Structures are given as structure tokens and as C-alpha cells.
Length: 191
Image (tube, rainbow, N blue to C red):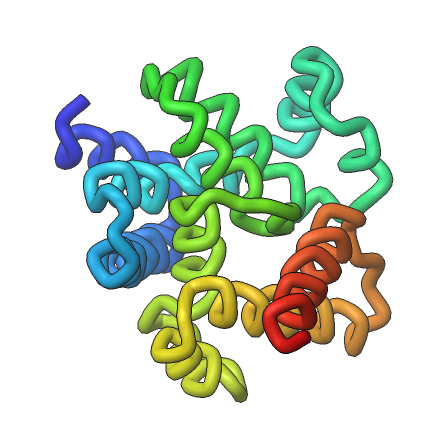
């Protein structure tokens, strides 16, 4: 499907502010893809579709999670997490995306997971550091690009987990597993 067609369809599903975020993620993902040798075409597609289900009806998302046998633990956590796996479902069903790497980049863009592909890492990172993000510490996360993709990902996941903990929110196990996996990878490099 043509990129402009996908963009127009996504734009119709999202409020203007969220659509602007999608454009920011797309721009950041393109830069990271070029920097780290990942297909820019795949990065663009995953970035455009990463929030496609963000404003979907919660009851509908719950039904998809159950019907599609997605991780049942999702239903024990805040519904904010649901849009990522349901977004991968929508990308496949409504947009005809079949590339498992693109679908996984959409599916895990909020939680991360151990042993992510470079495309998955790029979409996770781009979602957090796109130009529209203004939180304290975002510049330090953006600067991590100079240290490498895994280092940038680890810093981003650590930031997200720390943020959730500071709010007293539960952290989905995939996020903790992701942080542990890449922190241990860092330790292994040091040793």
C-alpha cells in the first residue's frame, strides 16, 4: 500500500495531536533506520501504524485481545498498553501488513521485550524521543544515539520503567524482561 494512502487512513483514525506525533515518530525512525542500517521503508510503515489503534474503543480492544489469544496478562494492566498489540492486529487485518518484523515493531513499541530486532528497537526509541516529546531528560536520551542502538534502547526502557515506578504504576513484565535483558547485555560487554 502506498505510504500516502496509509498516512491518510491513519490520520482519519487519530486526533490531530496524535497524528502529529505519528509524523514525528516517522521522522525519528527514518533517521535511526538510516543511522543503524535498517530498512527505511519498514521503519516508515511501522512508525505510521504504531498508534493506529490508540483511540480504539476499549471494549473492542479487550475483545480482540481475547479472541486473538494475545497475552492475557494485558487485561490485568492499564488499557493504555492494549493499543500496541491490537495495533499490530489492525495493521495486519486492515492494512494488509504481513511482515512479522513490522508487526512486532508495532506490537512491542510500548513495552519492549528481550532480544528485539533493530526495527523493533527503532520504533520503541522513536516513539519516546520524537521531536514533539518535551519531558525532562529527553535530550539525554536523544544523545545516546552516539553510543549505539542497544545503549539508546536500554536508556529509553530504563526511563520508561523509572517513570512508571515514580507514578506508582505497575510495570508490564515484558518491560522488566526487556530492561533486564539489555542491562545484562551491557554487563556482559563490560566483563
